[in-house]
Image 1 (cartoon, one colour):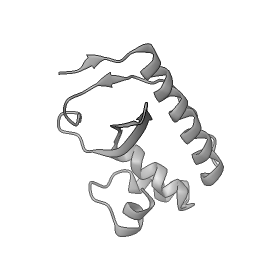
Image 2 (cartoon, rainbow, N blue to C red):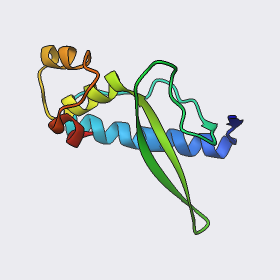
Image 3 (tube, rainbow, N blue to C red):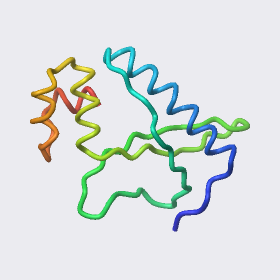
Length: 110
């Protein structure tokens, strides 16, 4: 069952996303923006019903203790990011987004 994140936790997550977004923009040579952030504390790995998601594990050091979390990204968006990092053309990315499986190079890019 999700519980509400504190203001500090939400701020931390937003800052991490802004940094990651800036780094990805520079690496992929594409403009990327953080549009919105939803923060919840979950006791299990969430995923949309009947949808495939990729989960990127994160660790936060708070007072000497490492707290773990994850960023859950729908498969199509994760494929777009990976393909952008590999500098794949837009028309190929559009076709790749329709896949339900990952080839080894896309998986490595993620």
